[in-house]
Image (spheres, rainbow, N blue to C red):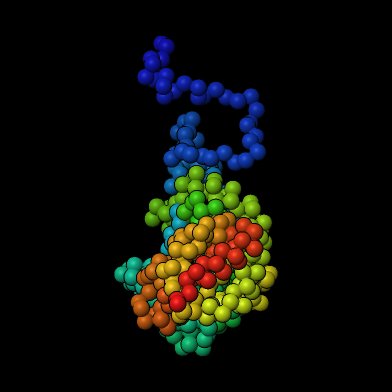
Length: 383
Ligand SMILES: Cc1ncc(COP(=O)(O)O)c(C=O)c1O
C-alpha cells in the first residue's frame, strides 16, 4: 500500500542506503536524541559493547569528539564533555569524593565553584575548607583524616594568581590525596596540569576552548578510570552537552592556538601600558610565571580618584560582559558578578574590591584596545 500524506511527511527520503559511506570533511552534527537499530540482535549488541551509540544523554559523537579533543591537547588519555564548566566541576569532584569526605580548595576560586562546594556539595555531606594555596603549609595543616581532594585553578579568577601546581601535587602525593585543577584561564596552550601529575583537569569550555561566546559547555579530562567515573556522573545526573553545542565548541577549539597567541600578546601589551598609568593602583598579570609566557586576562584595580561607574560607561566598543575569553575584548566587574557569591569579608580579604576590573583581552588591534582604556580612565577621573 502507498504511504498516505501524513506518513510520508515523517518517513520519506530516508532509508535509501548510500552506495559508499558519506565522507564529510567536518564531523556532521548528530542532532538526534537517540540512535536506531535494525533488529533486536543489534540492540543487544550495543549492551554487549559492540555498538557505539544508543541515546544521546549516554553518548553522542559530537560530545565524544569534544571530550577526546580536549584530552588530546591536555596530554590526557580520556575526556568527557559536559553541559557547562560547573557541571564539569560537579562530575569531576563527584568522581573523586563521596558523602563524608573532605575537600581542601583554594580560597580564591571562581565564585560559582565556591558556591557549588560551600552550599550544594556541603548539603550532600561533602565538606570543604577554603585555604590560601599561596601558603601550602596552611593547606597541609588543614588536612584531616577524611580529606580526599585538593582543588585549585591553574590561574585564578579574577586576580590571576598562578598556582604552583608542582608543589600542590607533591603535597597531595605525600598525603595520598587526589588533585583536581580548573585550567579554564590558562588553557592547555599555556599549561598542561595533567602532564604535571594532576588527576583530573576541568574546563569551562564556554571560555577559551569554545572561544566565541556562543556556547555553554565543559570538559573533564584525566586518568582513564577517573574519567570513566566522571562520565557515569554526567550520564546519570543528566549533565551532558547537546550535540550542537559540542560541535560549535569543537569548531572553536581548532583556532585555540591562534587565538591564545594573539590574545596573550595583546594582554601583555595592555598590562605593560597599565603599569605606566598613574590612575591604576594595581595591575594583575602573570608577567613571568606561566610555562609558555603569559595569559590573555588582565585585571586592574583602579585608583580611588577614578569614578568606577563612569569608567564602565566610557568604554565605547568594549562591552561589559559577565563572561570571558571570546575574541572580542570585554570587561567585567567581579565583585558584583562572578564573585558575588563570596561573603563580603572573603572578597575584601582577597582584594576583590569594587575598584577591581577584569579584562578579557580580544584579538582587535592592541593600539585600539590600549587607547580605549586610556580614554575611559581619563574621562572618569574625579574632579
Ligand atoms: C574559572 C572558571 N571555572 C568554571 C566556570 C564555570 O563555567 P560555566 O559558566 O561554563 O559553567 C567559570 C565561569 O566563569 C570560570 O571562570
